[in-house]
Image (cartoon, rainbow, N blue to C red; front, side, top):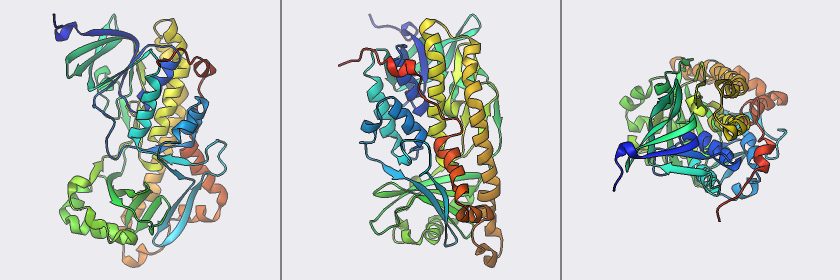
Amino acid sequence: MQMTMAEQKISTQCCIAGGGPAGMMLGYLLARAGVRVVVLEKHGDFLRDFRGDTVHPSTLEVMYELGLLEEFLQRPHQEVRELSGIVNGEEVKIATLAELPTRCKFIALMPQWDFLDFLAEKAKKFPEFTQRMEAKAAGLLEKDGRVSGVRAETKDGVVEVEADLVVAADGRGSEMRKAAGLEVMDFGVPIDVVWMRVSRRESDPEATGGRFAAGHILVTINRGDYWQCAFVVPKGGIEEVRAAGLAAFQEQIAKIAPFLRDRVGELDSWEKIKLLTVAVNRLRQWAKPGLLCIGDAAHAMSPVGGVGINLAIQDAVAAANLLFEPLRNGVPTLEELGQVQKRREWPTKMTQRVQVFLHKNILSRALEARAKAEGEERRGAPVLLKIARHVKFLRRIPARVFAQGLRPEHVAAGIVQASGPQKA
């Protein structure tokens, strides 16, 4: 007899809502430690354009500690060892990764779907790991004053997942944190970002970096056969861009990056130009009984520095380190869940403060140049970037803050050693 929607129930030790970097890494680590995990991902695959794809040295260090680095780096990727910018035709070195105390002194640029597919492939080798695709976490289950599971909508109907712990890793628009009524503190951002891709040729520059010119900002990321481009606009400014028309937008891109002039015609539809509404916020409390938020669900980051994936992975490692034993022994207490926030809040807060500072003192001022006379627009690089150009020591700071992180996490020995039985 076919089960009704209400009769579809499963039970696990940890249910993770969201199969992004935080959710997949946490699922892998807990399963490796012998904890039964169900990861719910609302999409049928990981193929989405313009998701963060910067895998930072601290994340590569985690892959090394897990014995996965060599195989991981066999996947197609590009390596960025230095970050630079072109400011009104003037080259400025922003950060060098050569002196980081990590095995990999580079950022690996890899499509996020490849990164997630790799983690899923490794996680599925553990019998404790279950991944449900096309399963949208739609609501929380509660019992005796605590979160006791997730109600998920699937193509086969509603499934109730009962769990000792629910982890919300479902992104900056987290349905789980909304359902839990957790307070979000928003810090305001003066910019948005428009993402697009343009084909790349062998004669093009090699470097990934930012270009500041004529009151506009364009970041060009070398993806091998194409450029992934981010065009920075004032908050809400996308309507002004669209109103000016595609031809004007193409001309802006060509003016900032002249080597792309013969290809900007590829941007022949607004469908190829995607808006990312930038937000910087974080939860006041990351947990309540039975529920923990990590990654973007706990703190949305600006794309500045490409730190979103890095911080999400660090959250996942910290959560796994602190909670795998409590989960193996029963139901984690609220105090134990609170240790994750205690561990990760400081680096999150400091990174966000740096981002907000850069928004106000570099990005916003660069955009404001459009309202000034052309003669002033050609004054050259902002003072902070000029100083970094001549003082090598200062180029280590952004590398430390963004590429390594202010509190890099290391996988607990109990997880590394507890690789357990694996599926054939």
